[in-house]
Amino acid sequence: MPLRQWCRWRTDTQNLKIALTGGIACGKSLLSRYLSKRGFEILDADAVVHEIIPDPAERRRIAAKVFSDPEERRKLESRLHPMVRERVDRWFSAPSADKKTKIAAIPLLFEVHWDEDYDIILCVVSSKEKQIERMTATRGYSVREAVARIEAQMDLRKKAERSHYVIHNDSSEGDLEAQAERFIAWLNEQPGR
Image (cartoon, rainbow, N blue to C red; front, side, top):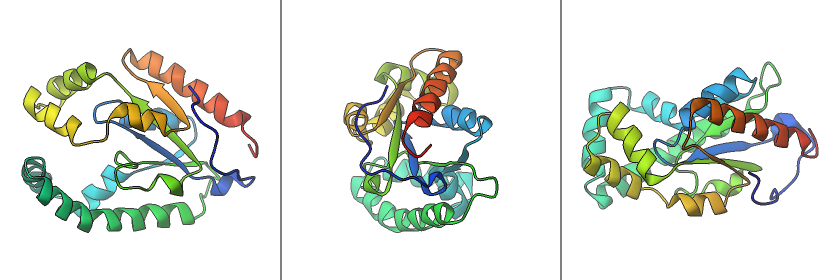
């Protein structure tokens, strides 16, 4: 559902900057895949992090350390975030070969204060119970680990309030796709589309 007016308008859709954000285990990846099938070009900031730290075992070791120590997390973020931002900015600056509208999936968009860089912010949210259920069932986290990761991020209500469009993902994949279609219809109604 649309929440707030755009900060600025662009008539050139090639340069339209859209960010997809939300909480952990809220469905950003699933929504990204669906939007990609519908013709959007997607860049996932988490995939950029995986390029920077390619070893999964190292990523798990780092995650275990930083989620238990806020100071270590701040140190890591101060090194990683500028590299991720530079890569995302470069991607937006490069023209899309197929003239597709680009969307960057950035889980920590508000936490790292990049939200002012975007024309439209799409946020996908879920209940905390559903996040925990997904993280324990499909990602192998304990309830304690899941809660720690959820609480390390900004409250989802605050993210939703600061976004232009919010999708609630507590139901089925079919419902998520239907909401994605409503977002696409809303986007196509905006000036410059």
